[in-house]
Length: 48
Image (cartoon, rainbow, N blue to C red; front, top):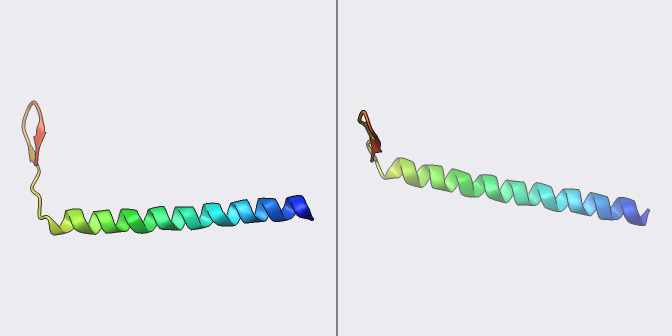
């Protein structure tokens, strides 16, 4: 039972970590959206 609890605890923490990363990603997406950036593509580069 001890090892099973360690595995379950580790998996639970991993899920929480992934949820946190996804929340931060969503925040960044919203911030970039709110910046109203325009992308300009040229033959040699992409400019913001």
